[in-house]
Image (cartoon, rainbow, N blue to C red):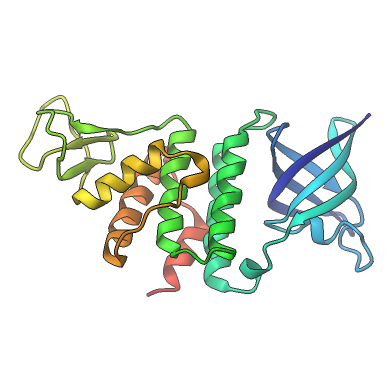
Amino acid sequence: MFEKTEGIVLRTIEYKDSDKLLTVLTRDLGKVTMKARGVKSKNSKLRACCQLLAYSEFTVRDYQGRYVITEAVSKELFPELQSDLELLSLASYFVQVCDTVAQEYDPMPELLSLLLNALYALSKLKLPQLMVKAVFELRTACTAGFLPDLRGCAICGREDPDRFNITQGMLQCAACRSEDVNGIRMPVSSGVLNAMRYICSADPKRLFSFRLSDDSYTELSQITESYLTMRLERGFSALDFYKSLFL
């Protein structure tokens, strides 16, 4: 039986002489492993569609419990990302995060849409990298079930507190302390707090419709990165490489 599905390639693994195993985040099947036969051949029609970051429509069939690609049509290859080391490393971080968050055969269409929008924002819209990074990180955390409580200070209720507790995922005032609420706290300015509130609640099509200063993008990115990696309880090699480019 043949099936068609759209998805973006998160990871590729060399398999035998001319084949590859792909990890693909699909819209309707969730994260799945696909076998691309003969894809390493120069004459393979699947080659472009099966590269990292390629967004393609795949026709697959189930063979002994594994999807085998029979046809593929590319929808977006993001060449701008492939030719820029900074953008490629940041995009690679995004797909590593998606590979961690997504579960096999558990559809997360909102995660796929978020990834595609983030890659489009980097490659086509040329939006600030730290802005795109922060939006992707915080919205991914929300999608994965880690929606932070940004209503106000968790202790006194003040609407504009100046600390974000990345361990607890809540706001606090610098002066507020409680034996029941511990964890790592990071300073958060009012502009960045408003941006965080916007990212968590905005329509997916308008996620990038806000602007901050460069310094505020840096602050926002530090907070969202710390929060996401804290919640996922792991680091990412692509993120480490991306940050090393600026040292």
